[in-house]
Amino acid sequence: MPAEPLQGLKGLQESCRGTGDKMAERRLLVLFGSQTGTAQDTAERIGREAKRRHLRCRVEALDRCDVANLIHEPLVVFVCATTGQGDPPDNMKTLYCRPDAVVDPWLVALWDKILALYPLPPGLEIIGLDVRLPPTYTLHYLPEDSPHPDSDLLQPTVPRAAPCELHPFAARMVSNQRVTAQSHFQDVRLIEFDIAGSGITFSAGDVVMIQPQNCPEDVQQFCQLLRLEPHRHFVLEPTEPGTPLPPLLPQPCTIQYLVTHYLDISCVPRRSFFELLASFSTNELEREKLQEFSSAQGQEELFSYCNRPHRTTLEAMWDFPHTTCAIPADYLLDLIPRIRPRAFSIASSMLAHPERMQILVAVVRYKTRLSKPRRGLCSTWLASLNPEQGDVRVPLWVKKGGMKFPADPATPVIMIGPGTGVAPFRAAIQERVAQGRRGNFLFFGCRYKSKDFYCQVEWEELVTKGFLTLFTAFSRDQEEKVYVQHRIQENGRLVWELLSSGNAHVYLAGGHCLSFPEQPKACGKTPRITVPLPGPQTELSVGCQAGKCRWVSLKRVLFAPQIQSFSQTGRKLRN
Image (cartoon, rainbow, N blue to C red; front, side, top):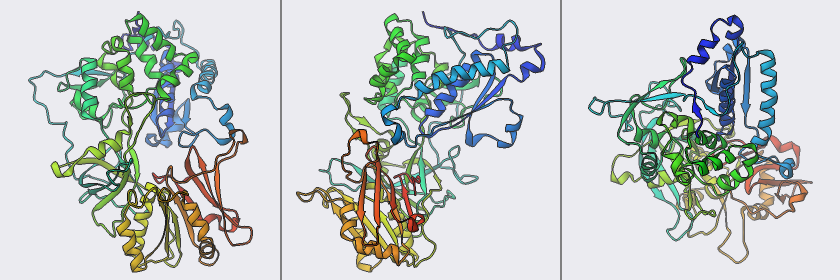
């Protein structure tokens, strides 16, 4: 039988009356710092377990917390992700395990300590796992004949302040140009937005955050699977007083808007998804499998089912049809996380293109053991938009990046940007050229000159005008593969002179952009490329983790502050 829901919080609240100040102190604040959702998922798990122990619990993001009020909180738990972009640290790869293997025993110890400080009030017991907690929100359908504002359209608005995550700007897409040959396996787009009237300003190295949405086909399948009426309007009401409403959902809202713009049905589901899903199941076989996936012992099998093939939430729901059709609409926001914004390095300068913004987007598409190819949610959505067929709006805002270029116009800049990693350097070069700055040196690499040489005409014009020195490496245009590190080594004397005499700054950006030598896994060392330079005992090294460039450094400590390395989304990696 499915778990019985806890009918509201009246019993909990009534049991708390009369327990005095001690009960008033039984509250917990859980703050999370999360990039991909792992820390948030753990924080929300702590919140659920706190409610089972009759603690008043709030779960909030760190950047939305008023630090000045922390002193008034009796208990605060901080949950932060610490392994960078999802990769385990180099020195623990052989022993690396999934987060739950660490969190499970830690939570047991945590609750022992908390209950020692704040025992359960007399007459109360820990709420068992066979009891389903109430949903965070109750979904109230509105009468079909009642008037409703048209909330399903993303309308351009004049922002009261600079656009941000809670108040993005609906930018008009001006162009969506494929910059790779049709015969090339990789679809890369140069996309331009009109940001006039937004109040947005940015400089080279900054990052634009884009809020994507699910494709119509997936939205239709989801509604059919759960037997939801897409055009029904509803309002949300918090189950507990003081719980804020989701800030990115209009009130009232339609089911179609909720599924299209908010619920991340394309993400890989986590353990908590299967735990809650099991509580709805009336099918014995499905419930047993769901309970296995949500148990500590079943995490390896869950990883093989979900993470390894990148199975989506929607696909997992198709595998449990009897359970899925029994999901109450009230629990949708507890079951499925919200769609997270995606970060892209800005690939243009406002000095060259006033009131415009450009990004370079590689459309993510790859195969796993599943028959259907995997697709990136945001890149696929952006590539599908055609501004020539009507007004296309994309919600976005800008975040400051960590890439800082030298203020001294005489300081040379060496940029290593293979593939789409060249995006922030295009912005930097446009900005520096508009300021009349020369001394721009770009090492660019791709597979074929004729297929994926992004911005070729633009680079060649700047070379002709004397604003850019360009070094290219086309790895597949000859029998022996050539990468940017080979071009750096070939021009080692120039690089050394720029560093030693010109005080040049070196920048690296990109993802899967360099060819790294194979090393035995047991050696425990980060794969790297070392390029000898003519200076005394000097090397330029590029390091890699999980096939991605992670850092660039000089062997001589003298020049370490001149080296900066970044991911493609503009996050600083390591000096």
